[in-house]
Length: 510
Image (cartoon, rainbow, N blue to C red):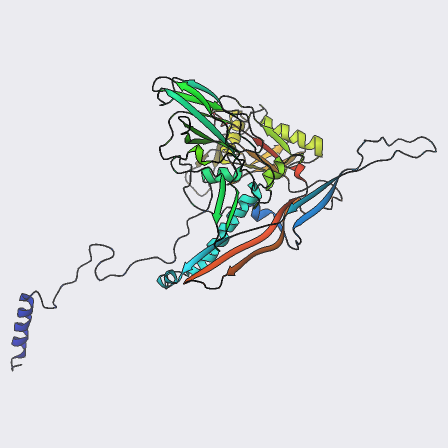
């Protein structure tokens, strides 16, 4: 390089700028988020946007010490079967009383789920999230959600049988059905099947009934993590025989009704030409108005075997099954059928209450001298109860919130019935929305018995042979495998203290 360094340097810069192949470039902001010289602005860890709602599992006592293959207990339910009078005459002895005794048992059931993490997934997630820990955490949460479903709707003993044949009536208005002869099949659903087909709180947000993709579970064959398989009932009754009706015109609809099935909380409806009936809707009452043809991709009724799949040998009986079980003496009320598609809603009693609730409270006291401590409802029934009560002027429509530090006053519109006054016993019973309780069903739950020396610490409890435990299986592929399991059974010492109102129609007010 010569003596005039500055001049030579400038000359070299000019030459480089004139040559596009030289490494002299300007840096600008990239045009897309994943190209150019930039960082990836990723927030760690991932957001967990799914509900884990398990109110019954959270509140019911869990008791260890279970053993053998089933829990057994005895109950004395009457200490004077013949209602022998107590009066005695001089010098003589009194009459002899006899007792009534009941025998109970409940078989233990194991339950659990599994999850996996590949080696590559573990590598890729470094410096972002511990996916191995996440896999176990999510498996535990998913198992809790499924346990909640078992506690409410598990069914190993209450068979729904064959769904009654629908009664059909065609109308020339109210729909888009073309002129044809239509065949309708109905399937009564227990809680487990209803939750599968409707999709509420199965560990995901935004789930709902989609006639194109929803499936009524019949007999389920599941391939397990170890390659074995289990076959069990999915919670649906045997499908009904088909019924047919002819429509005319292009704006027709079909009103379909079946006799109520005790133990069912919903009904799936299939419509189409004979032999080609497809899923068109699910109702929480024993009727529906079919206004349109089924989606061409919807489930065919022919995919359901001609068998009752309402019970599962892998379940224990949940609260509703134990209430519905013959001999439980629980309070069971089925609303009348009413108009197709509408049914019979809860009835205001013109005294700030609901006639069906008042009848239940009277029955609980007259037969068992007790009051339920909670009323579990769906969102539909909570709104229906609120509007039925408010609509009769039993509560104010507006609440005025005054803030002394504010220049303005805010009016909060709306009110909700958060509890119900049992007029018979003078106790306040909370109304609680349960995420898995189907619309059209109300569940009365008793947590305490008003009996002296009952020898019952918990009216209902989970008796566990083994509570939740985690397994990390030995490596057999380049994949970490995890399981979360528990083993127990739901014991209810006083099933007569429960009550269910089903087949509740949607209130016009709701």
